[in-house]
Length: 306
Image (cartoon, rainbow, N blue to C red; front, side):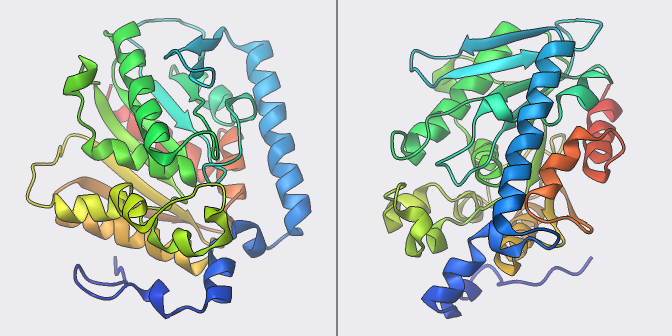
């Protein structure tokens, strides 16, 4: 597979974009192909709401479980029919540019995965401007540690994130677990249409509620952190799947390809897939379907391990 982008020391292509072009590239709803932006966002919300209502009505679940003391630090756990503490667990982190979205409308993958014996955890985190990126990363770290402590016999913990959620999941590749008193049994990452270098976001209106400084963006960019840690040992037993929609913006596509490239240079067991005929929103709402390409890739990865 040929992957084009900057090399480890090349200038980032986004720096050649005008302010207007940069704004356009980091506005996913401007790249939808089958519907207008507003209709797409409404449909995305409705599909998430319907999937969550259906999951709560048909699956055994533990809802609004606190993983910390903060008001926003809660998660929902959905169990397969044959409940076992030794099940694999897939944790999902929703998107929304770190400023919108909710666990209460994000149970897209619950029914297809629980039908195959996988427990699914939908995690909430504090959104901007209330939550800072540092806080969100810490919350995600603690949510994973919580699940590991609650279900120490799990057959593997898998992290799945969409857009901003993919960024938060990717930050876990180099998380320091010692201070949390547990090392989670991480077996795989499913990173969907993510942002891995936050620096270009600083120069868009998306940064207004985030208040990211350049330094803060660099400290929370898994792309830069992985580049700096290339000499550190990776975990070849942990599979990292990087996916992006065929109709995601060129910048989102570039970021995904470059992140995959960096993972490969670091010795990670990584793969890359462009999901054909899907935009930034369709790629995740298709997870409600058992036979969608991404659902099948996730299930194959999890079930192959057991």
